[in-house]
Amino acid sequence: MDTTIIDNRILKSITIGIMLVLLFATVACVKSTSPTSIKFSGKVLLHNDTQDSQYDVNTYEDITVAIYKTVNPDTTWARLNREFPHIGVKATQDIIFDHRFFTPEAVVKTNEYGNFEFPNLREGRYNLFAFKENWGGQYMLDIGIAKNADEEYQLENIITLYPEISMPFFAETDFEFLSSHVYRFEHDTVIFSNISVNPKAILLIDPGVKVNFVDSAITVTGDDYWKITSSNSFYSTETNENILPFSYVKFSGSTLNSSLKNLIFDFSTDGLSIQTDQFKIENSVFKYNTSYALNVLCNKGVIANCVFWKNPMYGAEVKNNILIGNSLFIDNKDACRVFECGGLVQNNYFSNNWLGLRPFLSDIEIMNNNFDNNYVAIPLCAADPAIMLNNFYNNKIDVELNNYYVHQSIAYCNPKVQRNNFFDSEIYVKFKGTNSLYGSTPPGVNRDQHYPQNYWKDSDPYNRIMDGNYPEADFTFVLDIFPKSTRKVNGAGIN
Image (cartoon, rainbow, N blue to C red; front, side):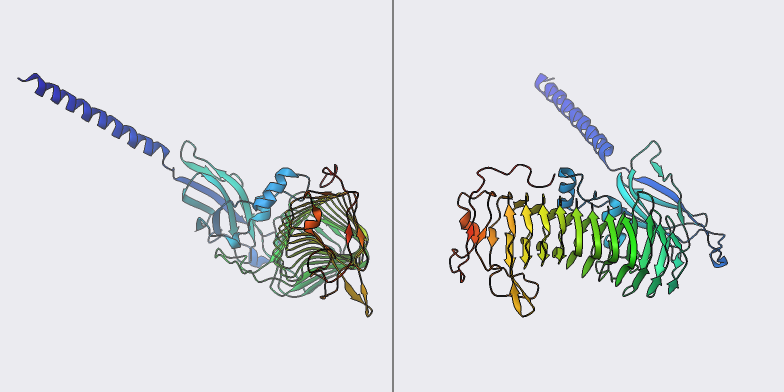
């Protein structure tokens, strides 16, 4: 036989063998890297801790359990958490996740024993929400589901739901909001008593409803968050990006000295109103409030380590003496308005707001803050604040001056602006602003201004200063920036 034919047959056989080996290797590789289906199970119980026998149950079936992918935090918020971990609060799932905004991966019902099962999940991190009408709802957040030996994941903690507590029109005895319980405000309510709040309590307020705490000393225990939110779509797995807001929550009392902490406050029209002698609010988040988020009127107030995020109108509005420190103001229209008061705004970060910090008829001190990517960082309105040791980055306008009509005369601005860093904003200073509270046409100053010892990144700062020397100016007041710093001011910005 021709040896050439034999060699060709051998070569063909070897080629086919190699192809089969590669095929089997490819199939094995695909099989080994394909996502594994994981069964995830758990248990929900109903516990009647009230005296109401209608909540006595002998079955735990028909409880809704929905599972969602964890959500990524706002990129600006996450960046600031990394760069300034001592400012604001961390954007964790219990703060940024609300099931009403997202489509669940799956929804199941419990059986008569309260057991539930998701048979086809992939590895990853998940948020879980369990609820039953009239029994409240509870979250289990940031659950890591990973493949194990038998491709099964059992939720370690049993979820317990308690009867939803319907709040009365009036309450005059001391009241405690218990941990992991849901309280429903279906009508306007006035509470004339001291209250205490435990971690993970949820206060659900129906759309349009007002809640007033009068002469109520408040005590908040623990380090976990508690929540005040709208009841709209709470007992639902349908996505709703237009949640109907409740009206407001107000704390008032002439002799009340109290503090709030660890509060998540969202989906109101007029926000949280504080009208007391002294008040402190800390480690709290205000988001998605359509008109006001926080309104503080007290003789002495403190706002510390708070976050104001995505409030489409006003973030914080404060009056009288106030200390605002270590807080984040992100993606609000009018982030912080300081009315007719003294005090200190220090170590805050204002980013992506239309208006950052707006002093009105105020001589407040504004120190060691960062203003980044706002349309107007500081729009003064007939105010004389001390603006010192701040950093301004990439704003449309850093400092804008507006006048205001007071008793048939015009009040102007005359701030002290020293030792700040003005970096890459489009306009450093604008004398004739467009953001007076009630509209104005004259410039915001009635005299020449002197802002010395600032660092201006532009080699010719007057290119970015809209004073009387700016082309087409219809006034004559000018800004003197000398002596100016030739290098960045040390110690400016957040400490």
